[in-house]
Image (cartoon, rainbow, N blue to C red; front, side):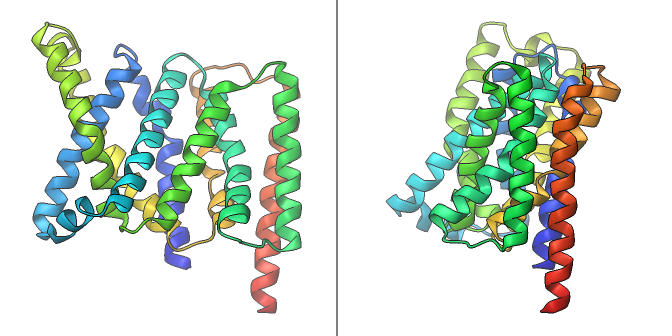
Length: 289
């Protein structure tokens, strides 16, 4: 349990700092950024597998239709999440993205309850209820359907569920996902390059360097997340997830000057109060145990 919490916390911290990274790629189309993330993540992962000489699992996975189908689905969910998130950051919607990841814990708890038959304790339900009130307040005061937030929450919620119950470990599963996505990604990059388009032929050296760095920066947090998801409950993952949107919120407001009206502070205050309730409940339960 303790190692799982550490892995997940590190992953969420890295994701919370991602707006800074993607702002460096504001001149590159969001879809193209995702294609680069996919290709260079696969290169990084294949390098890790080569160093470890860990290939035996791949043939078995490719010959198992149910395993392959599950990871094709998780790969599609991951790509949709990436595209939405990169677009949001590049178009000054960092706070909308943070709202999506504040909603995600509620999705995680619901998925754990429905699909994994997890039964949160009363104190945990109280924390979820307080967080839900905060999310509802933020949604209502915005006066519109927060589609960015909903897409991010739903796609990553189901992705986390699939990775938790998946038949492969963190490294193997992520490699298979990027392997599924890479033919399309590499094809797009080659097509753009052949026609004199895309960042590889048009961007400056610094931008190309940021794109290449996107491989390990994408893969490492996902490996940490998958390792954590297999070791802790969906409810616990949901609460740890607040690390990421809190950092995104602070970056969006303080670093990039996105508006944060006082009325929004009420909703975020409720969500942070939920964190306090959950933490105290967990501490008290551990002492009783």
